[in-house]
Image (cartoon, rainbow, N blue to C red):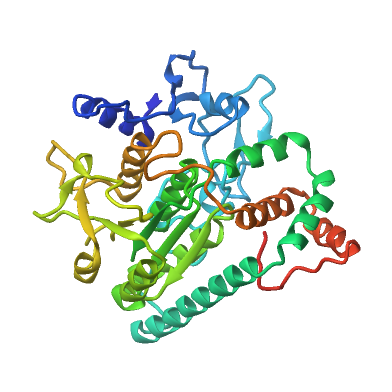
Length: 398
């Protein structure tokens, strides 16, 4: 069986829009793996070579069509030796940034801790649950703010010294890969998600954003906008998704007003995806109409952006559609928007200006990457301690 992912859908979307595009919409190559011979228990997949190595692409060209069982159960393979082995369900495993299998039930994927389907009976009433969640949301915001402040406050010379101390403990291939990625990062364009409801969607969006070189992502989690136990339970998983995005710089806001006000004070032009009659076709947007950096806003999966966001945004846009469906899935809409941003960017011009991170932020991200690349978590801090370097506790490197 051939399985076509969201990326395959984007290929079709690209073809559909080709008559309007003055340049190829996607500047990165697609790998169509279904042409490979299909072995027993193997399925072809559609994927992109956005930034992966040849080895990773080869790995994705053929993936085993696994039958998932619980950790305590076993399944008998149909290989020649007929060995019995244990297989782990992706829904009960851990989140892996670089390779991620979507679960059979993404809406209630339990890898996003706390994201469990609510039962009919509950030991806690809705009002109490909402109040507790609001406190958790406020704590997440505080932790992220403290981490960012601690990161930006690091002495530049100390960061360089720490990087030099850690480099011998990371293999050359990993360092080259890290440098290749970080040198293409941009701060000229960022994304803001307003009250998203599905952690699997958010996780997919974050990984796609990473693939296009966007470094900064903001998320509005307004506790008052999440009504009912199901919505609140899913919101818990959002915190796990955000906490696991180790390669991105994330900021959490508790309200739309705070988010937009802060971003505008930083000089960002706010462009929100919205299905209203006054919205422009994304193909007609002038991404460089002024010198301000851009913040793209994506709304809630079901309700879109709020009225407040609509009134505060500098401009709204829509993604062209010609079918009966009214809107794209959030992760698909994010990928399509990124494709347009990428197509409008070339040679350091346009919304995605690769390599525009300042030197200190680049070095801090490299330090973070080196620490995360050492297999033994205690080795990195121990090496730094020998050099007289102690990182602030607020910085969660791993």
